[in-house]
Image (cartoon, rainbow over all chains, first blue to last red; front, side):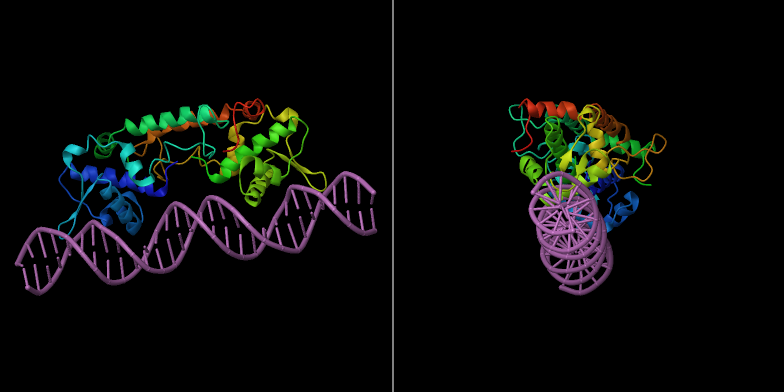
Length: 144
Length: 144
DNA sequence: CATAAATAGGATAAATTTATCCGAAATAAG
DNA sequence: CTTATTTCGGATAAATTTATCCTATTTATG
């Protein structure tokens, strides 16, 4: 469903949120250890998240990645996915037709629509805060 | 959502079904033209569908691909997807955890579950016959 | 200002997916 | 039996995704 890059990006963002809520900046090294991902690749994904202003980076000594505390509740899962995988999950035909719409649908158009709307709904109604809270409370996990 | 291979496989199977219902065998060449896919690659995918007994191949002169008429109504979209992409769509954690279940969930476990069940439901309750009928009646399309 | 610590980013490599090519094997028909 | 036709399957190539490495740039601190 999601690309590897997107999986890493989501987990990394959650981990940063958990730490930012406790005023701690984290490094790619720490992140990749905690979410069990390749470090250099994860660093690249973090760059994309920074460019899309999902997370903030602070260079130099005592630097690292963080998210403004107040922003954590407003960031949606959809924003993370969009920063990394773009909008391919939203648009585009399930069977790869260039033009697929009500007037000229692929054979699975309607049925596919339902699933994708469910996904879109999920991504747009899940906040980073919810996800981070489950990690903080130990109800959910980022690795193994 | 689906791999390219899977997209081609679904469209190819529908096209074969449409033609088999009118007692016509089709070649990879004809198929790839009608579904707008690379011919040799499509032929490889057809081999996988034959191995999984979704479609039948007849070698030699006057050969080609076909599906037993009576079988068309019984083949589910899920069988086509499974033949090509395997069961990765069903199992596996949305965030790539090796172990992800009720007792040890990833942060999106429950929400992801809902979307995937919707997808599974769609794949298992859509028959090849339905899809082929829409093509025959000109209500849906396999290319452009 | 010098130094150490940290992210940014380009170059490159490995792995996977997508795609092509060609000879082998099978089959219908003359 | 021979030939033409057609799928099968292995080898290979191209494209994309995933992953690594190294240097440049930034910044806090002494």
